[in-house]
Image: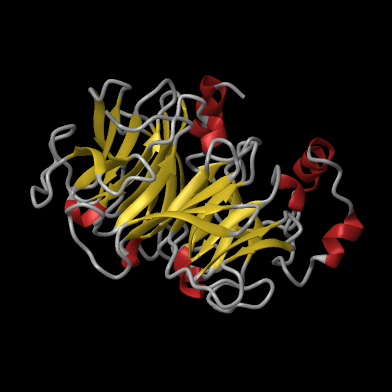
Length: 363
């Protein structure tokens, strides 16, 4: 679907009624099943205990990587809800991972551990920690120090970049070194004045065509910068009080969540015009501090509903939840349960990095 087609489609949905989990989307589900590898009824029945009733695995193009923050783990689940990968191995520890993204090659995963003040690069096949920037448990702004890093990504050229929230800066690192290659913003100068300074940036995501999209918590700002670091647009996420992890769906379409309770997710233009919004106030459909939403190839939205202990897929055509892993408000660790999931990505080739061949650090 082109960016213009998606924009037109979403613009017609702003008044859709969010009633919660959809069980009767037979026409759409039938088309999706034909398009996504033919998952059969037998497979769905076998996974009933891992997924919420009514979940349609065919809406996902592949496996889902989840940063299961309060369970101190990363895990990968299939569209049917089966766990196929988990990190760390028994006896090891990965404290409070809040976001995790595949690298462009798919060989590694970059995890931010915001409240442990480090960024970790994990070898996917060997489930091995290969690199870490920051000292666990020790915040700071000097060499090998971070203060609440968020949304780190590794480029094909080997550069690692991340938002460093409480240092009010964006950082660029060249592993295996433990000094910054570049710093955008000044620690302690938490003022919205991009690209010179940023007010508590909690997200830095690639922009279509090169550059990045930066989310600033203080002041509810979303900034779009081009490949040279020049500010293209700066706007407020409409109706939000705590914008989180804004990313680009297509040229001229941004996607963000409101990290509040009840929370919201919406698409909007760089000049602040809402295209689509999902914000039920109560009931099973309501969100509780969601922190990241990503677009799926079929136009659906994948997001982690952090404090409802679940990862869900929303169909923006109907404003209904069509897939759910985790039990709303029931934290746990056994199969089918999560505890404050704080990040998601798709397995390659549908990963976030895979969608951006021009993935590059800011500036």
